[in-house]
Length: 515
Image 1 (cartoon, rainbow, N blue to C red):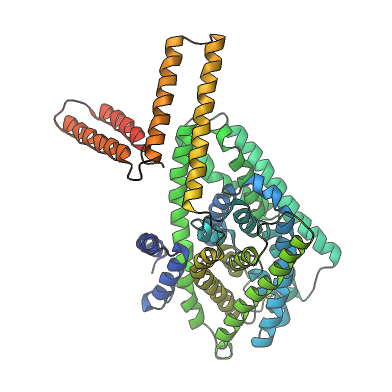
Image 2 (cartoon, rainbow, N blue to C red):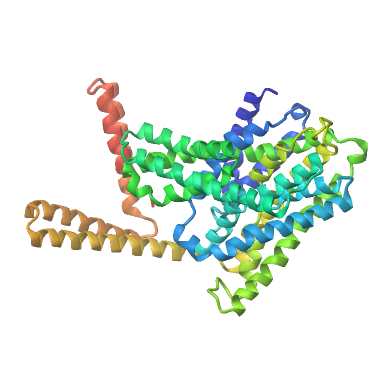
């Protein structure tokens, strides 16, 4: 199959899968991987290969950027200590454990075993964010899980480069070289991300064209990623830092109209990219298995053992860490098994490990084909598939069992309190303008009257679970939209006027559907 046909097929498949995923309350990434796996078993998908550049350069930056934008800077400052322990210490321990298990169960040499460990040691921000969107975790816990997956890339990349260097040339860098490499990746990537964010913010403050704003928003993650990779730093870290900075300043950089458009544009792009990449993860595994030689057929026990090792190491790291934090009297998320259990199970692998796996060289330093590369690819991809299927499908039930999820009632109550306080502050501001005689009393009274009407309507809708008012208003707008179509068909108005009136009706409709 041609690559364009494959992409179009995967997008169509993902649309169907996402529809059913919402109806049966199953994470879409898990279903996409399963659907891709089933398609990969057919003869039509036997020759499908994935280019490293497609995943690392085309797909990865915007997905990482979207995940970074969702990160709360306020909550991040509260959880930076455990995030640091997870992003550095847990990655190193996981890589070592996977390396030893792989050497015991497969013919892979020790150096390639540690390459596999470095690939799978870090959790994946794209998978973690995609799986966690509908879990309703407490803000601090959600930030902890997301931040770990976003910031452990530098550690994993250092280990990966060291392991690849040992596998290709047989040499290992000293501690000074390792420290220098980590500083270049982490600090260099963060610095480049901050510079890109500053430059983009400067441009966006002077831009009012929605189309141009959309282009800038789409280009930003690629710019940060490419500049960091050119400087031999971490492209993922650069994208994360740029996303966190710009995400925290979104209200200052653009107006409401542009923000709504960017949300729609980015939502579409993220859906398309996630659809393709999660489907490809499952799609390519069968074809990789078909390429294995006779002595490499023992891949399944290795995949299961490595997947289990990653979970066991994570559990063994999280529970003592949570106990120590509680014993020291630090700020606690929850004094029981629930938080370490959820954090342990939320560490899914996905797109970033896939990109690292695909970037493993084909030959060693002498130009000879890298031994057992196909087996390494199968084990890495197999572990990613198991992670997305097993952990992805069981994470939501675990969160419900733990009782950590924020209830819809509490979330809605917080939303209502916020809207009510904003309305009260608006009325107070109008009172100040009236005292200062800064505007016409007639105008101030009209604005105050409209605010009071909105507040009364909000109170009525809170007490009306069926939202009769909103339903009737939407029915009225539907009647107006039909009338507008007839006016245009009868020649009463032209195309430009029809579009302007339709946009007006669409904005009115948003008032009754955005809740």
